[in-house]
Amino acid sequence: MTLYDEMMQDVIDVHCHIDFEFSANERKREPEFLWLPKAEAMGVRGVVLKSHWWPTANVVPYILASVPTKVALWSSVTLNITAGGPNPCIVESCAQLGGKMVFLPTWSARNDVERKGFSHRLESYYKHHPQLENPNYYFLDEKGKLIPRGREIIEACKAHDLTLGMGHVSWQESLAFIEAARDMKYSHRLIVNHVQTHIIGMPVDAMKRAAQMDAFLEACWNALAPGRMDSLELVHQFREIGLAQVIASTDYFRPYSPNPAELLRMYLGMLHEGGLTKEEVRMVACANPAKAMGLG
Image (cartoon, rainbow, N blue to C red; front, side):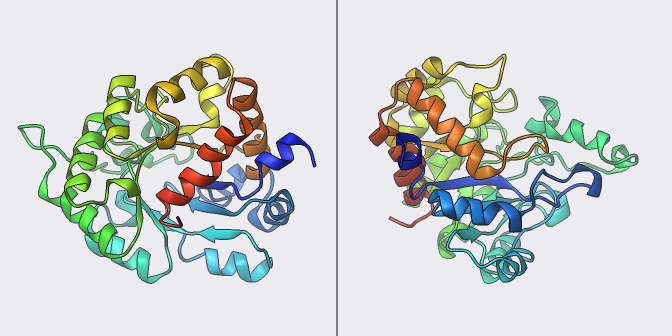
């Protein structure tokens, strides 16, 4: 077993998009029943299956029925308008259907629309998407404080032992959620997703504030995509934030990329080359995701 094989043992990917999500013409290279056996062979402990469009709780049991695997496959819901929006009853239904994670709105978030995020990409999938009335969800009041509905979402996640990802809301909104969750003693179950992307653009000082309140900062493999950060720069940022609050994930999405396990192996290797030790890689890829998922 090589060093890179060792680093893959018991990893958890908290951000992996489902194969059949937007269009039959935009499917991934390998559906779940093909890559899950490979993930098991590589030592993956678990994966959170996500969709921008539909809850994945309905399909995960059928995927697992079609492919016996020791890899834990956890379902989730993203609180976009198509799933019912940011409503506590949607959180409850996710839990009742066996879900383990909730994401705040992505393409339905005001921040995503204003920063030309995924909401703009939907037009390439659907001819009539511009006719959809996007709710532009926003969670701060006129004083910059979290609105009551935001607190209700946190309370519902806590009541049902779910992890809450910040989706594509602004980093200012994320800090407000984290502050409220800290008051509820639940900020350790919050993850600020893909903080380095142009959609979020979270300043390092804000990342440090989030980490100080026990929230996790997620860095996805695409932070190291060509033209973005290099591994030395990203690892330096990890150390500024504090490795104990960093999570490495794939945000597996693009049809041309390797399957999730292979993509994560490549990413962790890049982080090791950027200066993380094997033990530090396992912290951000195994231990920290487990804590964020409430697994200890």
